Image (cartoon, rainbow, N blue to C red; front, side, top):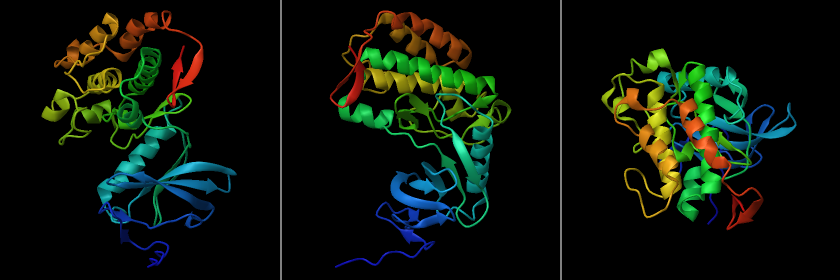
Length: 285
């Protein structure tokens, strides 16, 4: 039996139990933006691949779910993310092209990049080879160093928020805060397993919280397991020491992201250089 196609703008509940716009290929998100495919999403957002007429290009639309549009906190988070992205320009941070903050479907228009998330890559293939993991760590460290230099704390660094495109891209600034606001957090933000101790305690949250989350994410990327499980893998001692330093319980004992990159950069010279493709993921040989 064929199911009827939802009308545009109609609130429907998908198999995930989350409210959905029910948009399909060919539907109009807003005038000038046509849905090409649904890409997934989270509790507050649906994500679509769209064709944008003004740009004559494809992009990604991050849209508030219909049951969140009337909620002030959700709209504030979208507005805050738009303001952050508008002020940033870094090769390892996702770019924003437009923000529609009013109207029936508030959304951000973001660059479209091909590639899986780091989370999906780890789950499918296991830990990354060193020739992929070390450059990745330095790239993400540079993005976080840049964010911290602009007075922002990401607060949700994790493998699911790293897109493994031609270059790694840090995505999702929906819970990011200025450092001055992060210090005043009255609720835990972030994702289980990647939240720094001080965030869980809501005490003294600052850029060091991202350092801890970075350490947890890269530990998983290099061992296949969340910390403190070391797994059975041989790793350069400097990498182990650096990630363990990032995971120090005391925030003031963790290195800054510039120091992290500086510790790891000497490893690059020992890595093979010719790029090849093995088992569906980029490696260097």
